[in-house]
Image: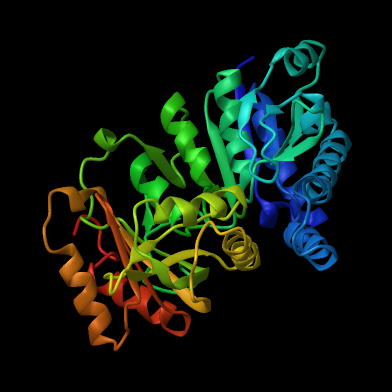
Length: 413
């Protein structure tokens, strides 16, 4: 039988009624002749609740125990989905990561997939099982401990299974009916894209778009997995949703494909650091070892042999960054006057493969923000994106202004 991978996000399995609705979609594909691998997330809100328990118990938590706690949400959903399918007379069985076994690295809370052996699940398909309901987001390390893939890791699980099993396609079901030019909750002018290039989707995902996890798009691009983003609500036709595909498969597109935002950003500045060779390594080495995900980096002009170094990181990693810098200072690795954290900022970005061949995008962006009285704190660019840090209170205004400036409500503008 051909294999289809179907992934259901947290909002799609938030209640028993929604699990039943998702199960009906699965049952329809079984009736169409597929053996189905269903990847499930935790029910909406469950992972945040579990993370909250961990952070309240231990602010600088042991990542191995973090994984043991937060992975339990997906286990619950997998069991409930399998039971629901069984009640529909669809032969189904739930699978936790270690039962597959999905083998990962030992980087707890941000593990990478090493291997997905197919023998166990394929043998069960051969024995009459029609649906394997796999708990997303989790695997097992070489030390035989549960390891999770990071937030949104169920998307990565789904694409990895599609690649490993040679699935006909991978359908990602979520609470929106595709990929939009920006968050529809912020701009009512947001437009659904029929297609988006892998590269653009990678940037949007890494910059705060919640539709797909970055690594899932990387895997889909590498293994040529047919990837569709669909809504789990309402009736969907075969051509519904958004297809994530190669750039050459898109005939015409806007210079800017979308506007992304992330409100969970912090700006951290090391004041008066010695400006000498190796200082950047002395700062960012300890941060990397502490598991701090550094994004934007800006160094000020040196004055009298001292400089300021600014970087951004997720707000939930500020305490970890502060601890790493204090330790490095105490050990004499670096010397600085003060460390200032601003947790009231947001990142707003514009993305588009058309930016490679069109000049003036940065000027348009900065002019639009200036017209709204929005001050830019930090700027970073790449070949197909421009990102800025601004005061968080202006985030929605900035997104709306940029969406209008680049006329993203119009196709092929």
